[in-house]
Length: 257
Image 1 (tube, rainbow, N blue to C red):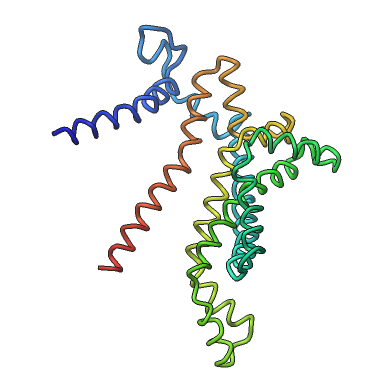
Image 2: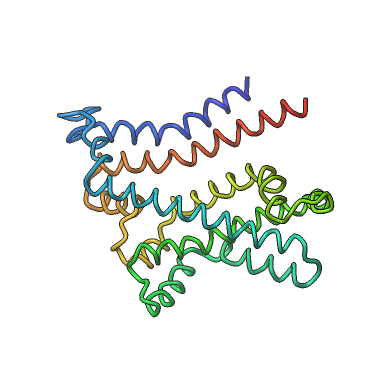
């Protein structure tokens, strides 16, 4: 009984803010005590297909996908190299990988802002993408270190001894085994970029309008309906990650059973 009460309480605690956002996103001219305002509708949600909010969503998607792919590729190479090292070099490499993850985003953003301004990348989408890659690569490198620490490199050696070229070993042996880790690393990099505020704001200098930046601007401007719709869209990728992780765990349990 107590567990059920706690579960219900946790559900209410977690879902109430989301329910309020959903109500505000469809409320038109909301005024207390009316629930849906004077002119309820889906105007805020339709704006996601165009205008400033739609453009910001497209920008965030492009940055997230680019960051996910880039971070997965670099993290794979770095994590594999570190996993094969021993002693001081490996420890030093892990420290360098963990540093951008542990550094406060505001501090990291200020340092990158100075650097990118000198390189002429301040206020550009390319500069924001490179800034997002810094913490994202840290996460994916640590992820792939864990993957390759338990990796059986004997499979690769066996393939080479049986006559496979390096390319054949990569395409037919390594790539199929790394398909899922690469997808998970890309999704991790995407989420790091998708929720990024300080780096986007500082390096983008307000010119690169991602969805997070646009939602903050809408809140400050009092556009509650548009801000609520944008905030709910920001929630979709984390929910997808939870769903995929849950599915992956269930699939693993079925295979083990």
